[in-house]
Image (cartoon, rainbow, N blue to C red; front, side):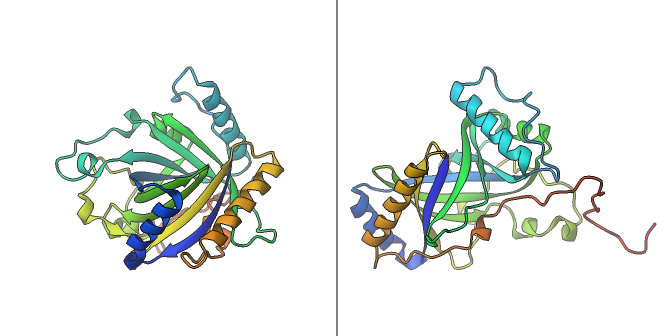
Length: 281
């Protein structure tokens, strides 16, 4: 699958106005969702998804194809992957929420490639991606294949749809204390684990100190080997950009912002320790 999108920032004070514009443009009220997003860092040497012991069998035909596609991509290059779970604020957050075993909950495994060079269309970001839905035991699958849990965020989304184009106002939050988001070396702690329960929504911290929203206008091409379909999606997004001119200021985004590749360890070179203590033997 290929994902193409435009990007614009929306100030907190302009959020209601942005929703009103998009509601009129798409002829619908927003669909609000909150996602819990866990990040897993792949091994220094890419190895794909070779251990499939924890993947539920039998596989659906579409899921089998996606696992194969993901394995091929991760065999060439190691990445940071996302495990995504939709949650409900009133049910899944706060002191009254029951602890959750994430391996028992279906989630979405998401991989996104390093975006393509702009090729004369600097406002567009486009990249290959794989999303595998309704998957249980994602934490076990990641662990089986040497993908290490690194951190987690909460993602608040207001979505609108017009034909096959998605308009998503999104912003992220830290569910953990801010100190948990400093490098492991400076904390002197071992490997972190996902939270067993979520804090109250009112206690989470916005990732962006100015509490801004990001508007993503997205189109997806299911068969990424069809350049004509990709060009059609590009033209459609740029046409929408023209229709929304004056309401949103779409920006050129450096593709390095979306780089989730893991630095590779070359054969025959020993990896350095992540923490070096001077003066001790």
